Amino acid sequence: MNLTHQIIEYSSKGVRHRSYLAWDQDIKTPRPGIIVIHDLWGLGDQVRGCADRLAQQGYCALAIDMYGEGRVAENPVQAEEAMNAVLGDMKMGTTRLKAGYDALLEQPQVDTETTAAIGYCFGGAMALHMARIGLPLNAVTSFHGALRSFHKPACGEVKASVLVCHGGDDAKVSMDDVATFKQEMDDAGADYEVIVHVGAQHGFTSKEADKDREKYGIPVGYNAQAERESWAAMMRLFERSF
Image 1: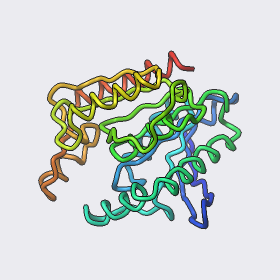
Image 2: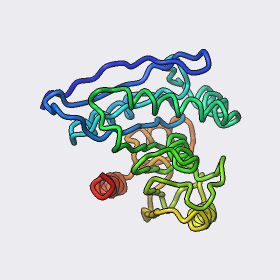
Image 3: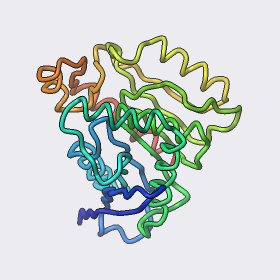
Image 4: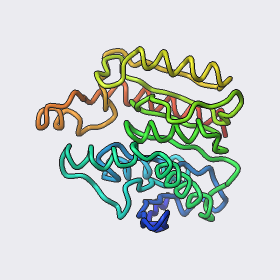
C-alpha cells in the first residue's frame, strides 16, 4: 500500500475550498470515489483520518471543505456559527456540495460511475441532502446525522441506496425524527436502511466526543461498538452498491 494524500483546491461562488484527497497509489486503475463530509467542527483530523481509512480500503476519498478556506472551529460557538451559515442558506450549501462532488469526479483515480457520499452529524445531513436532490451517487451513509429535510424528494428522485446509522440515546435527533425520515423515504420509494445503535449517543463515532462533553457540556459521547458496527454496515452497503 502506498497511501497518498493532497489538498485539492476549488471555488464555488467566490469561496475557495481546501479539501483533502486520499488514495492508494499502488492501485493503478480507477476505483470508487467517496465524498466525506465533516461534522460541525470543520475539516479536522477525524474526517481526514476517515478519508485515509477509506483509501486503505481501496477507495479514493475526498473529504470536502464545506466552510471554505479549510476553516476549523476552535469552540462550539464558532462551530455553530459556521454550520448555521450553511444550514441557513441551503442554496449555497447545495452549490458547495455539488462543487465538491464535481471535484471528486475530476480526479483521475476515480471511477465516475461508482461514487458515494458519507458524513458525520452536520455532514450526515449534507450527505442525505445529496441523496434527496437526486445526485447520481450509488450510496449514501449518515453517521449520527441530523435527519431534517431541506428538500422533499419526489418518488424516484433518490438514486442512491441510503444508510442511516443513528444512536438510540441521541439527545439531538429524536426517534420521532427517525420515524419522519422513514416516512419520507417510503414516500420517495427510496432504497434505505436505518440502524439504531442501542445505548449510543450523538457523535458516537468521534473519539473526541467524551472530551467535548466534559469540556463544553454538550450531549455527545463516543461508543466503540457503535463505531465498529456502523462502519461495517457502511462497508456492506458499498459492496452491494459498487
